[in-house]
Image 1: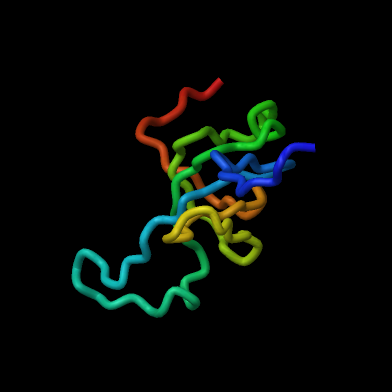
Image 2 (image 1 turned 135 degrees about the horizontal axis):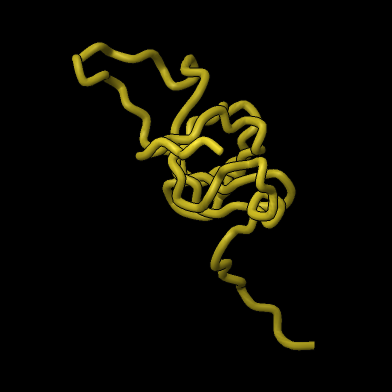
Length: 108
């Protein structure tokens, strides 16, 4: 047996129908200057996908890819204590409610 040592994790890999998301910083005001309610009152938040699980990657019915900006419901999001600012969350794919796209996809 080798010596036990402090492990540094390099990445987090979501398992099953989940994605790893870096949550966007909450905005307290709109561009027009309207104050927004406390974060707990906002039902959905945005973030950027850091990693997708193998199940999502191989599922043609789930159009999510790494680096996509998404809108997700935070109720079932699990915080990952991986970085000092703790902005990473494992999010079930069913809680991803929208993905932001720059171009319109062609219809088949």
